[in-house]
Length: 225
Image 1 (cartoon, rainbow, N blue to C red):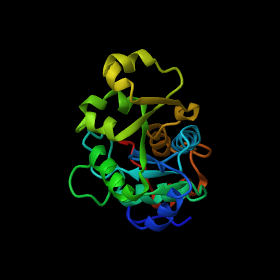
Image 2 (tube, rainbow, N blue to C red; image 1 turned 180 degrees about the horizontal axis):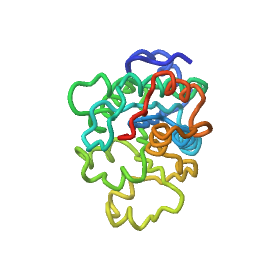
Image 3 (spheres, helix red, strand yellow; image 1 turned 90 degrees about the vertical axis):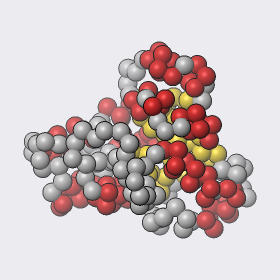
Image 4 (cartoon, rainbow, N blue to C red; image 1 turned 180 degrees about the vertical axis):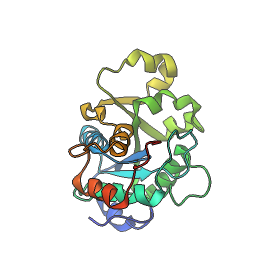
């Protein structure tokens, strides 16, 4: 499956899909993907199957509004790793929409752009992100508009406490959230960066092409990561 370089190249095949299924359901999976790993891929595939999504588009973040506590890899490195990780799944795609956006990237901007692109297909948007990020949803830009325009899927880690989410968001917002447990999210990008910096193996934590890319480009060597 050809990967897109902008969010507008696949209009024709997407429109043809809409004739067989209505509405067209698409998942947006945002994140730094620094690096992308099997936890991300499993969560995306589980979401696709459970919510009957036509495809899941991975959207590497550009300039995130929240504080980054490590020296984030370049947008191109993160984009290429995500391309390599998703290449074998015909239901996965990768978008450059955020890394090519000027200024700070907000989730609501991305959701609006996808809605505009899929307007001919009467698309239903599912925004897939981690439980920790959803806990802070009310601090996002235009949070009520986010849950109005998209169904938010909170990917949970093993042993999560759903009461925390209710306390943080309240019942009204929580009614628009869907929970998805993905056991493999015990894998974390933070741990992978740490392991690389310490010279420890990362095999079986992420796809082999991503592992080779990290080694070839000397990513995550600094202990500061």
